[in-house]
Image (tube, rainbow, N blue to C red; front, side, top):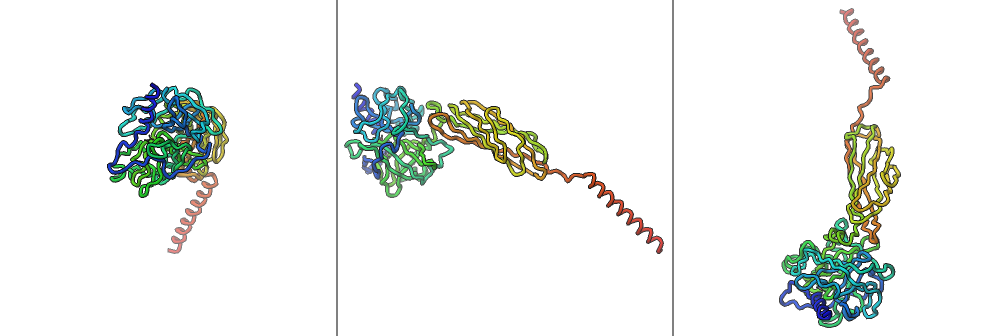
Length: 435
Ligand code: ARG
């Protein structure tokens, strides 16, 4: 029974090429890659047919995004009609680079969350989350990757160099690659990927393409499905930008590989795995508006965590020129007022808000419209941090102070007036006498 389902699972996982192009022969082997070093990509997991070793039964890849959630392709864990396979027919092996070495730890899957809009024909929304029966032991060769969020989607802009990982087939109808392969391929724009003669409109906005359009040569292939396409995060780490989904043949010119565009699924991932604790926003209310120059302005910044888990929050408020911060008081945590006010707000729970009240004084020379910008940065207390950030800008109309009529100023004006009138009457009198 299990064996039968297992065969189905394997066959389904490899059932590629939803849009075969006549005359284009598939080349089922990972192309242009090289062997990965052990522990180089610690979030990579193998999805394996139950009752077999990783070397015997690996059929898809996946990525650990928390200690107990793996993200993979929906088509890896569903039957041809899109219905989920029983989770008992496969398991997840983390901490493995060489399948035959059988290193790492196997975990059973307690539930598979297939995207509700997964389309098994077009492969739109090809994403599923697997919940492990127990959290993986993190450290060494087992680690996590942060899914790419819309705020960071430029990391996977067309032309960015992405890395694809997997144990895909080494020869047509042959055996799986024993050692994890890594392939670098540039991201191709959806427009170029969808062009006539390329993928002819089959690429939805939920998909991302990678490969070398003109010459081919760098691609994932059958058996790599569900595995990661990662991009550098610019800080020495990586983000999960894609999930190996489909292709026409492998590494052919004009046939880029197609991946699930992970940044489209922040909501889906949050709803189940809840890792985007730092889903922050900040709003600001200011009074009075306009504020007179030399007057004081009080404004309140409200930081909201609409993520699914608690997160620690640091708020930074950059003051415009001429603004002196009198005080900054946080309802939780503490602030250090200055030209840039920094408040350490501590931990903010999921779906909670907190406020910071700032009192400022405007320099008398300040006039016109001034604005200041507050940014909040968060680091999630979850094992995966999405380091989210948000900004709010308030524009405050500042009325320029009219030059004041001081006592001495009035006196000077008055004496000028008196002197002037006196001169006029003298002149007139002189004129009268000469006439
Ligand atoms: N559907 C394939 C699998 O299940 C992945 C195909 C990827 N093909 C490609 N040329 N990038 O393994």
